[in-house]
Image 1: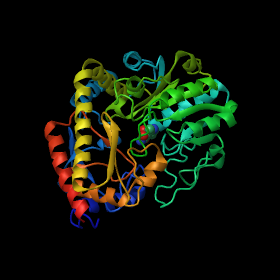
Image 2: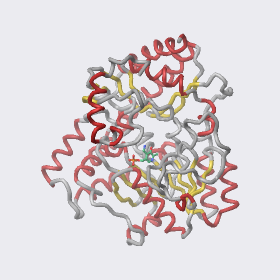
Image 3: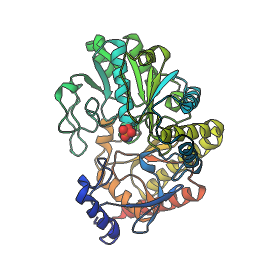
Length: 450
Ligand code: PMP
């Protein structure tokens, strides 16, 4: 990377080359790496991790979000080890952990009366959409442009349709596939609206009202940077879906067990019919879930809608989730004081650092998740970003990249892609916050002067 110098990741580069000889592209999830920034991981501990070249970082990426208690969360790991010793690794039969996690889950999440476990956010969202189609007997799902609901053929549409293009295509409700190999026919079962734009959704309901099974939405859109719902927007989604006999699905894969123990639905006060979970639910162990009202979930309970999986509700996943939910239930105030308090401090500090250096930016988020959008030189004057289109119009990829590298060199890691986001964990400390803000001041000045 020309911004870091060749020697910076010498060991990483060597290992990456070796990995790439057998693993396609050197990674098993798209866009985990950025070209020229092939950092290889050594280990993590709390809020920090180390690369194999020996650099230490304060981590604001946290494995794409699961590490809500930081790296190597002791209580969760201990609970998993004990559960393996007690049960083994896979049950395939119902067992006590099902009851324990189910009880904690439904106690913490207001809109979930019944749930099912899955293995990834992708699966949970596929299951939720199938359930909504079955319940309503209607074919189409509405998604927002710039949202991400996993990599399934049925949902990987219009996520970041123009991410590397200077100009956006004009908005159209027709979805754009996010990969080669996705049959067009899946796109026919989707419609695309603009987040925070009531009219775009009203129009879709007016034209296709009796075909729409559900609106599937990230309650806080966290895959185009972080975009907050405008006041009343989630209430509007609740009302319009109800009035047309469609369901509202919240994809809480990022917001669940993060904005509050009960996720966005608790913190923002709007209850969907179905919601999906992953990431923070396992604190780093692979587990996901979907659930909702008793009435809708009845179709799962009676097996009219098929959902399954060899690894669903396995011992490792459920033991981790039980430990996570127990922590969240018993230490709620303490944990969210850290997540919200430090989150707010870092957001404020980033804003101040960039302003002091004369860099135009918008830092927006809520509690433990946020993003920093840097303005293109010709960007319109905006005070907030309300959807993917505005993020695209406003954001300078070049300034983001330079700030990212300048922070990286100062030991602060956040994701190198300009539409990813920052996460904070309960393991972050006062000294992490101070070191981050000191780095931000220096990095912003460096970027402004270069
Ligand atoms: N939904 C949202 C909102 C996500 O951010 C993601 C992953 N980043 C997913 C679904 C997919 O989850 P997974 O990667 O666990 O399949």
